[in-house]
Amino acid sequence: MTDGVELGRITCPSGELVLIDGGYLRLWSGDRAPEAERPADFPAAVDLEIVGPDAVMAARTFGRQTGTMLFDIPVDRVAEITGSFAEHCAARGRDASLRLLDRQVPHRERVRAALARGDRRLSVNGVPVVVMNGLVTDRPSPVVGIPGDDGGWLRIRVEVRPGRAAYWKDAGFLGVDHARFAVADADALNSWVHSRSLDGLADVVFWGPGAEEVGGEPVDEDSFGRLDLPVEEAAALARDLDGRGIEADFRPHSHHWRVMEDVRDSADEAATIEVGGASVLFAMTSADDGFFPVHAEYAENGDLLAIQITISEE
Image 1 (cartoon, rainbow, N blue to C red):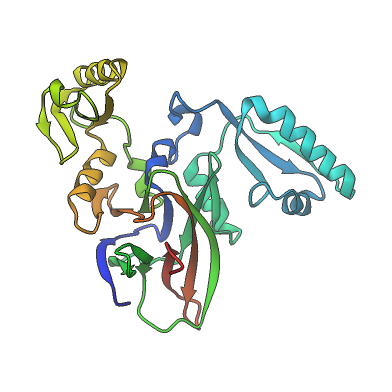
Image 2: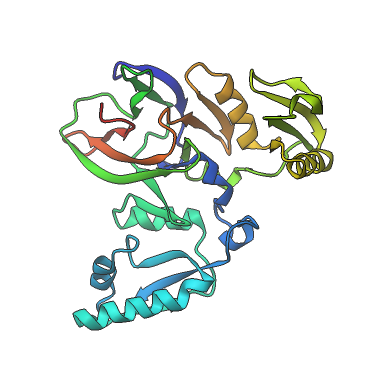
């Protein structure tokens, strides 16, 4: 194993792994319809397929997403994208067009299709996600952080098999908007519950001017909380605090809440949770948000040895 700090161990019974912004798992549909899982604050969207004799080449030169699918196109932008694609094809003599799908493609199907065509890049509502196959299925894989001189991570690696890498392959970028990412078995995410309370309870954490007068217990040196409230009572409190100009975070007791509780308590800002028969790891990036390059390392016989996320080029 590479020298560093072990952040936890993941398991991958399906052999197919997803690396995604942990906050954006609230959009993940698993094997369900994405439109049924979409939060109210995200615009309605559709999926478009590039079809025709020149579909593959037209998709490649259009360059919006990988493969011949355009996922999660906001409904109010369909006409614009369709017109832009038609102009693109006309200018290059491509015989291809866009077809509107009757339903959106579930995220689990997107992973399976991407890997079947040898692609490691995926887009979820415009956010770059990395998918990988070739994971070991019969034992845990350590996830290791390589620290830099500034106390943050230089690299975070999923150590799949021991051995010396003969070559590596670019896997694109992992897009992060919530300063955290998840490393998860693709099938396990079918069972992920991000925003719904699993026990009917929720926490409200608040901070800033006036927060101390609200009451509650200290959560850390800067914030306070009212914990283990019935969900409706907690939601009402969060709305009331927001109306009074007090910063508040409504935290239902979901899988996301459970693992983030452990992440916040961890010296390395990382933790694992058992979901859907697999160990899923969450870790803070240590570098806030950004686009982090990912590559996969392989043995001479083609076995996957490691997956590396580069956090800093220091």
